[in-house]
Image 1 (tube, one colour):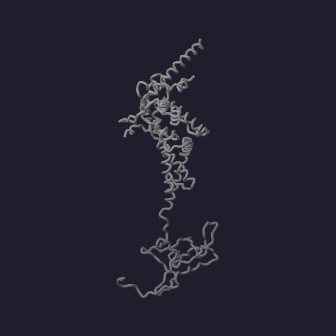
Image 2: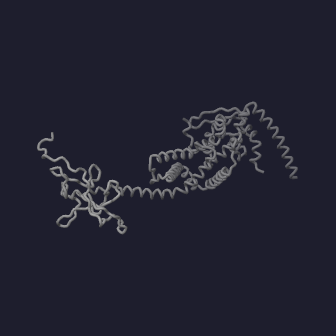
Image 3: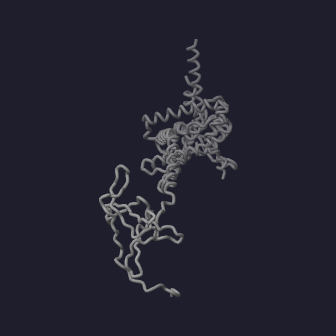
Length: 108
Length: 329
């Protein structure tokens, strides 16, 4: 089983989780995810996910002009995004608990 | 403004990504790729060993993650398959090479001289086109038209090289074109070199032209008709120039047309002096009908025919009353 396949299903909630505390721009979010242990995450997948969450109303975005470099596009979580994250947290917790128990039983 | 600090390869990559998303509405595409340069700059500044991925695949990942549809007529043709296979081979190769520092420098160097290749392939293409249509020259176009073609090809090739003016199927076209151009470049240089030298020889052979003989306003004088004081045609007049050179209008073996339609050719007949020397400055010169000698591969005198007088332009001209003695006025 490939972790990148699993990641596809949970990237939304992972992205929401890392911007929950602090707004971030594209690569900043990638870095946080990688620092959090999702080392294999593709940057384009993250940027695309940010864009989709924005379209769904879970994120706001704003552009910050830079003096010495290209513009940065920041994303921040919306109340809708927070409630989405809460729901997904519960779903994930239940799902992972179920999976853990299933796999432990299977191993035993 | 601020965009000046974006590395060229980042800018090129971002452009290629946008091109690959060109089927999306402009607004959608701009939203999706806004800040891309900043993110890429940071991502690839952080890890210099990182190699930029394939922009088309990158765009696909971006598009899929954003939940946007793939282009309506996503082709699964064999050409697309080849392009994908080639792209993945190239990526594998690139990552293998990246592990070798010397190779990294070589790759970076080759990346820097890519524009030279864009011009070379345009030159090969325009040269090939000119050769097909018979406009062969040396290394440079033989006419203004092919200069325009060359210029046009250079512009298109460069734009494609920079990831501009893309369209569906272009990557395949470029790959195939690059292979053809790479295969042809040496033979073409060799042929062009030969032609170049031929052109130079041709110029050399043309030279200033053969100016042997007597000329009037650039036209060769083939015969001279002298008229005397009384206005009547003279015969067997020997002419010399100001330096004493015989004013010869022909040389031994020189031929010309006997009749105005040039149905019969003949040989000019020189005069002969008491010392037995033949002179081609004796006028009016006569002409003897000739026959072509297969043996000598040239015109020779027909032994059965006698030399003929040439028809003078005038039977006679007005007689002279003397020379002007004072001013011309």
